[in-house]
Amino acid sequence: MTVRVTTLKGADAGAYYVDALPNYYLDADEPRGRWHGKAATVLGLAGEVGDNEFLNLMAGAYPHDETLRLGRAYGENSVRGFDITASAPKSMSVLFAVGSPQVRADVLASHDTGVQAIIEWVQNTAHTRFRIGGDIATVDAEGIIAATFRQHTSRALDPQLHTHIVVPNRVQSPDGRWLALDARTLKLDQRTASAIYHATMRAELTRRLGVEFEPVLNGIAEIAHVPAEVLSEFSTRTAAIDRRLDEKTDRFVDTFDRDPTPRERWRLEREAATDSRPAKAKDVNATELHTHWTEQLVDLGIGPGQLERFISGRIDGRALTDRDWEIACNGAVKGLEETQ
Image (cartoon, rainbow, N blue to C red):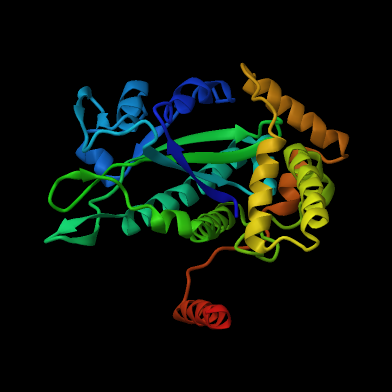
């Protein structure tokens, strides 16, 4: 998966997005974050995310008045929200890093469309729980509040296009109360969110640039015809995680005399990502970074224009036919039959 859901707890749950995030490489003309969701509109939130409004929401208060509670008061360790982080494939991030202005705009638009698809899915499946006549009922929520924060680099300053979708833990129930989001669907269906993002992003990028993709594996695919050495050159962070994961896996096998289960390996991967995490760079100049990335590509004997010409214009878009839909639906059903 390259879409992961993290639970945000404690009084400082929103501080990172206000204090640390702005130093983690933003283009000068790009807003830090944007509001999304039907419930955001109900609360009068639109456009650029404001620090105070965001922090108030994460504290369980009305965005424009911190003295008014938005539902029940939070405890010290209460869940304040959820961070759904959607990361683009490395090939897409590299294309953004070294592409011409128009190509970069197309990449960003494709990524943002995939992110919007996640938000719509979360909103359409969002629900809450409360008692009716002594029984706990699960009911659809009246939309969500979401703040998106887009970033362009990994901690190792490799190109890594990704967006944090922060969903405060407050949704409006049909009777008008503000209650906690029932996040079981969100947490259990991370693979669904990942597949929605990638499928949407691939369709949009192909429509815009005519790129092909490698075979889809677990819902994810790289842009076709991008040389392997290019992906490796810009994957410093991934290499560090892989090294740490190998060490942890070897230690697991030595300790338990067996391979880890899929769930245990997932936990080892999360631990490896945390263990190998470098400190975030501050005050990074966007122009200098793009220049550096271009120089890295040229050192491999590939110019940015050459890369663009090699991967784009390979597919002409067309409207989907009824037969296309039939093939897609039959394939989906067949895939489910093999696993369910």
